[in-house]
Amino acid sequence: MRRSVELQIITEALAKMGPHAPATRIWGRAPGSTAEQGADGNVWAGDVHDVALHIVTRLYGRPSDTPDTRSPLAQAEDAKRARDLGGELGALMAGGRALQSAPWYPTRAGDLVHVHYEPAGTMPAFGETYAVEPRDGFPNSLQLCLIGHTAPDDSMTGFFAPGPIEEPLYEAWFEAGPQRLTIVRDGRVVHDGAAPKPRPAGVMLKTLGETIAEAERYLELGDPAAALARLRSATSLPPCGAPGFVPEQADCARWKNHNGAHSPDAAYVDPPHQCPALPEQLHAVVTVGAKVADVHFAGLYEERDAAVDHATGFASFSEELIERYVKPAPGAPGEMVLDLPAENAHAAFGVQVAVVVPLQVLPDPREADWRDEEGRDACAEYDPDYGRDLDDEDDHDQADDEDGDDYDVDGADGVAQ
Image (spheres, rainbow, N blue to C red):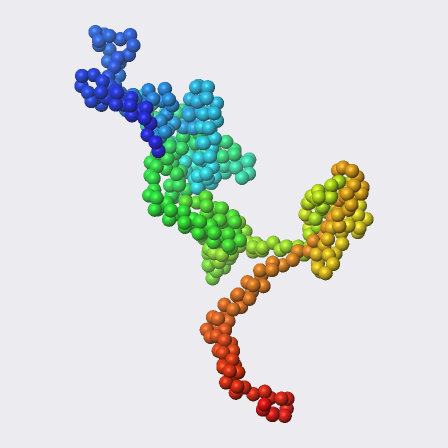
């Protein structure tokens, strides 16, 4: 990330001020106070870097290489006070994207959410812990319930309970900020905002490769829900572990929180995946304009009635026109031909004719080549000499022809010639 040039220049300028340069801290007095007053409360001190950062932020905005520890709501409010509508919307949208793109999102029942508060004035640092529980009277909705805190006063806690109906974590995420939240799921920390630890590039690439490979395996099994859950998870999906119906049956080996029936087979999909089959015939709605060259394909339908309903929206459509202009292609079974009418035969402008053309869905011509290749591979695996035997026989016959020793048996007479 590019370092702020302005921040570096101002930091060096402040460090070289005064007779005791280079300085590490700057001391000052509040406006209106004098040294004779001796009021310690009017004296302030600040680190050179902090003072420089304050000046740069007021002049140019926060430097790009400085992490913003403010909550999304605080960032939006600062942008609003600066009359920066784009910055306000950008802060709120960025906070929403960060929450919804988290691998552990959305919040689940049983999660623990801990909020940490920095010391402010006479209030020491403290924290409070919420449990995510089902919300009474709202099916499929969750809420935050305060279960403990370390604050000296109960009146300073519990403000994020029960949370919005859509997502109980929204208020804590936007107001306190993700950097002050710690989220625990199934006994594991899935979000540690207080201590982000960047992962080495090699580890990240390895983790990304494992994620893609496992998601691809779920897709090959025909379970897109499992693939989506794996992409959202930081680790491999744990097994369901639901006990079998009888003691002899193993526990469910499918991924946790799956839909459908339990099974000891980890590759089981309920319902079993079936690839969609193409219909045997399709029906195209074709319109021809006043200019013969103007041919428009208005739609493609599996059912003829649906195509006819579409075609009836054109005033120039009738079943007679289909019989007149749509005909089987001569010499090409299964193919159709649309005879274009003479120009201006019906109208000088607009749609001249609208028809429904039946089209036969043909098999992929490459499938025969694939089957032949699979057959050759199977034969080669069964008989390593497959193919070479035929070549040897051809070479042997050719050699016999050259020597003139081949025989021609004429019918049942057995006469060699």
